[in-house]
Image (cartoon, rainbow, N blue to C red; front, side, top):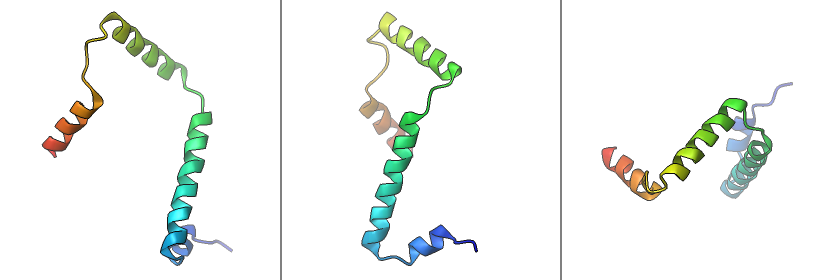
Length: 73
């Protein structure tokens, strides 16, 4: 017997659906935090860290970049 989890979740009251989403997101975040970076990801992070240390004034604040992206949409 196969259960369609999405269809079952849709039948639940709003508050239960919200709690399910929160619980699922917490589980996903915990799983993601436990995953190891690949060697390629480690090298990329190292390269970016070295570039930042060589020129810490290069780059822009995240808020500025996000604002620019939103203006383009």
